Length: 113
Image 1 (cartoon, one colour):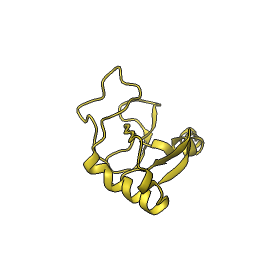
Image 2: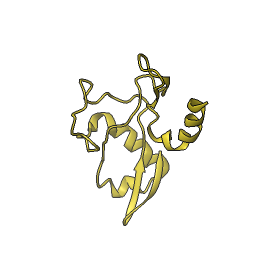
Image 3: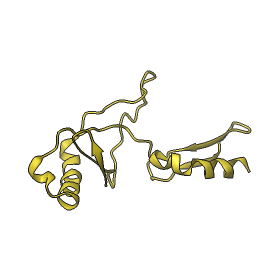
Image 4: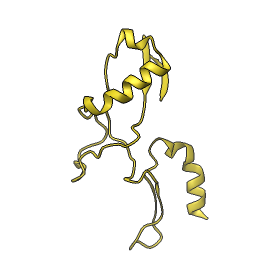
C-alpha cells in the first residue's frame, strides 16, 4: 500500500497479491494507457484493508474513485530478463512493472556486460 497527497485528498494505491489477467487474448494495437472497469467484488477487500489499517478516517469519508489500470506483471511475478530467443544480439528486460525505473540502470548494465 502506498499513500500520497492528491489534490485536496489522498491517493491510496495497492497491488493485488494475486492479480487477474486482463485481455489475455492480446492488447489492442492502439492501446497506450487506459483505465479498465474495476472488478469491485475482487478489489474491495484490498481497498477496505488498506483504508481500515493505514488511514482509518477514510472508512468514514469513503473513496471518490477506484482507478484500475493494466500492469506489466508476468504470470509468475518474475521479470523476463535476458537474451531473446531466435533474435541474435537482442535482449529483453520486461515485466518489471513499477520497479523498472528503480532497477533499470542495474539491469541495463548486467545485460550490456
